[in-house]
Amino acid sequence: MDEKELIRRSQGGDGEAFGVLIERYKGKVFSLAYGFTRDRTAADDLAQEVFIKAYFSLPRFKAKSEFGTWLYRIAVNHAKDYLRKNRSRLRDVSIEDVGEQRLAAAEKSQEDIQSEEERRALVLGVLERLPEKYRTILTLRDIEGMSYEDISRILGLSPGTVDSRLHRARQKLRQRLMSNINLQGGNNGL
Amino acid sequence: MDCKKAERFLLRSYDTPSGPEEKAELRGHLEKCPACRKKDVEYRTILGLLRPGPVPEPLPYFRERLLARIREKEKEIPGLFGLKLAHRAVAFCLAVFFVFGVGILLFPPEETPELSQAERLFLQNENPLTETASLLNQNRAEDKNMMLIFASVDDRKAGRR
Image 1 (cartoon, rainbow over the protein chains, first blue to last red):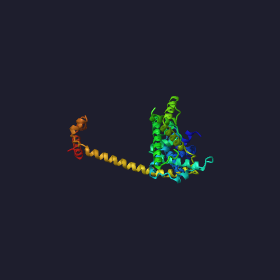
Image 2: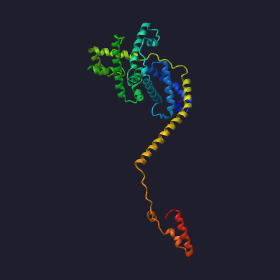
Image 3: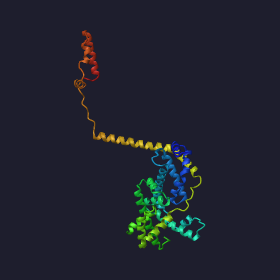
């Protein structure tokens, strides 16, 4: 069924039509939520809340932008709220986190996998502590792989601002990472 | 090219392919500058680590759970909507009452002095003889007298005198 028709029917309260939209977008919304939370259960909950918010805001959706862009905007704003509320509960990067994120990759040795996951956990730990605007843009560009144009539409920023903010965010991430590593007295392969 | 500019070019090169001139300029700088070469390696490693490994699937029955939550919320919303509306109505009434009260305190209404009958007739541009015309038109003296008596009684009732 055509997306416009699905949206029109969902605006009228048709749960089945909205169900089809959920199926179409749940992967991307969940992935975005996971990029922010790094936790499957939290990402699942966040993605559900995004869809609930979207469903009740649908009557106000005027199709000025693509439905996907509109939905991502809701997702990003909701994720920002989540980050703000959970700032105090940021986890320290510990060996348990590394173990939790370890993924089996047959072609790599156990040692390689462990080392890579340790480094990834370190980078993500520092990313979590960056100011929200930098974290958001890094998540959209470097984790989700979105284009500048999409980021610009979702965040309501000019492409020039996206470019400069992204550069600043990467610089901040590298600087903090380096100072963290220096404090810990090693280079962790970075 | 200085290191600051080189860093800007480097960061841009991770997203969009640089032009041949920019590329050559950057390569030339990197060959001479070990600090920027190190930065390049660090950035590439960080970006590589940020790129996600496999993203897990949402928890099972995502759609079913979501639709159930929406149905639950739909039941709650009319009540919430009514409550919200009531709060707004109370706030609106208070605001109107306050504005009205302040208005009356600041600008008390002026009491208009009562106009005399002559002034009223003059302002309304009326003929003072129209009311008495029917009286004056009476031919018989007793009719005229009776009408004068009734008119004076009516006037007294209306508090004119």
